[in-house]
Amino acid sequence: MNDTVVLKRGTELELDIQSLAYGGMGVAKIDNFVIFVKNAIPGQKVFAYVYKKRKGYAEASVKEVLKESEYAEKVHCNHYYICSKLQSLSYDQQIIEKANQVEDTFRRLGGFLKFSLDNTVIAKQIFNYRNKMEFTFSPHRWVLDSEPEGVDRSFALGLHMTGRYDKILDIHSCHIQPKIGDRILSIARDVCLKNPQLRPYDPKTHIGFLRFLMIRYGFNTPDLMVNIVTSYNDMNKLSPLTDRLLEEVPEITSMVNNVNTRKADVAFGEYETLLYGNPYIHEKLGDLTYEISANSFFQTNTLQGEVLYKEVEKLIDFKGDEIVYDLYCGTGTIGLFLAQNAKEVYGFEVIRSALEDAEKNADFNNIENVQFLKANLDTYFKSGQLPKKIPRPDVVIVDPPRAGMHPDMTQYLPKLKAKKIVYVSCNPTTQARDAKILHDKGYKINKAVMVDMFPHTPHIENIVLFSK
Image (cartoon, rainbow, N blue to C red):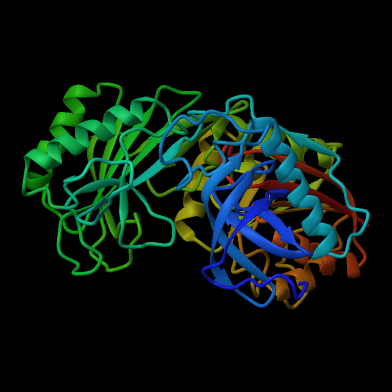
């Protein structure tokens, strides 16, 4: 940075926002020194306050928008910048910025200097698309500056404030979930405020009853699940809430109570009680029907999930005789979807409950050319030896967690000698890192397709086809 520019914590200055960084912050530069600006979008000129200064970058927040961007969009809610983040940016520009982020990441971090996406697939439905929402009950409500004085801070039902495990923003409407979810939220809040025994759980003191309200929606089916997570089992205490929801929301087809007595702040119970209907909902992707329980993993955007899997299918270009390995297969959604075109599919997953769901869904859809195996992929293939009776793969599907593949997995993946590797990722940073290793092991990038799974959020889903 030029010596004439003095930049430190507390500095206030005018900035031109040039682009969008991975994660959703605006990017400005002063003499090639990068400043990430919270809640800013490309094309804006802003007056900003620097709240963090590091050796290679700074972070700032907007105090005033001096000139609005040509890409600015009218927002639907007053808290978009906390959860959806990009709602103020036109959808067309969101796609451009996300595509630029993927390409920049592969060029800069992966060393693929000529990398470019072959296609970007937009979402047709950009609001009310999420099929699962998880709301938190809390006695520590975060109050926005725009809210009136005197707001009761002792109860909230909503979403975590960014970077705060202990503060919850009270949510009355969410524009990325189906509208019926707002009605469920309203009823739950009203019941809890009228019944003092329905006390929200406090993660600081570990006192309280209600922890989470999770809703799963069927998009291609009429199913609707409400999962209430509590800190202990007490059906009598819970009944005012469950009775009212079932009475006023007849669309509910499943209601369960997960009990989490642990301190861990997760909506995953140690055991589950069925309160109404079935312990699962059904959802359809293509010709397949999936059974989804409260704690099952399933693509969070049903409509785009099907689009994503069809893009994977196109990249593989099945001939019908392929042996496919589905690594990190979870509940087997992608493997089952592809099995219709492959000779055999083998899914590998470490979580037993996920494998049980996968096997159940294979049986439900009468799919017989799929086999699921319990495997810790950090070590499973390390010896280079495959289990007996399992043929070597022609195609490997990799869909790891955000952290990407374990370094050992990336190193010995080429030893499987598959002709094609299809890497699906929700984190282009770790995908680019792993891609470099695969490239050094003899696999070249053949095609890359970005599928926008989560409009108005910074999240990115990217597919890369590697071939020998």
